[in-house]
Image (tube, rainbow, N blue to C red; front, side, top):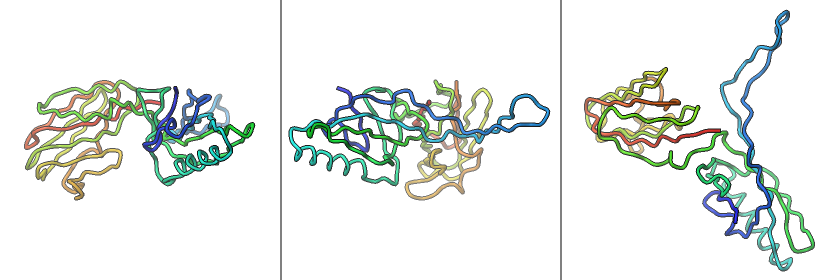
Length: 243
């Protein structure tokens, strides 16, 4: 039976039956077209981003009485409207290798059909990318000079933990990039979350102890990763993503 899980709760546990899903939705790339007098065609002005996309499920709630239907509807509303000010993970049985970051930010209109079944559509606003579940696994590398291959045409913003003491360098080299970060005071470890754009140790910011090319990215194709100095190992969660 098909279902989805949002904010740690399964639709199946709420008694929801899915009629259909908008499976193939994808975001429209954010750009503008500008006409130039005397020039055929239009100039493309990209904004360098994808906006949110929409994922919707057409559902119904079976019930044997009005009282049962009312109770189920109340529970569904309480679930969907909890923490509406942040993204939560969304996964389903239609796309088992991936998950999304989503928030429920729409009206919920439930129709009572034949006094026994509530029919409705749940619309989620999702970040543009789908994230590979296997890309959320953290792996430790104790030898410098390993390669991570990004299987998709979109750069990812990984989580990296740099273990060691003193100072050291981390280098990520891909086909068109050669990025270097120098760490002056590791003190056991320094964590980097490129999504949050932050270097830190526990709750202590460490951005002022790191010099380098912004925050690490894993570009499409092969990424050769080396480290030296006081760095003993690195732990990486690559966060592979695609549309």
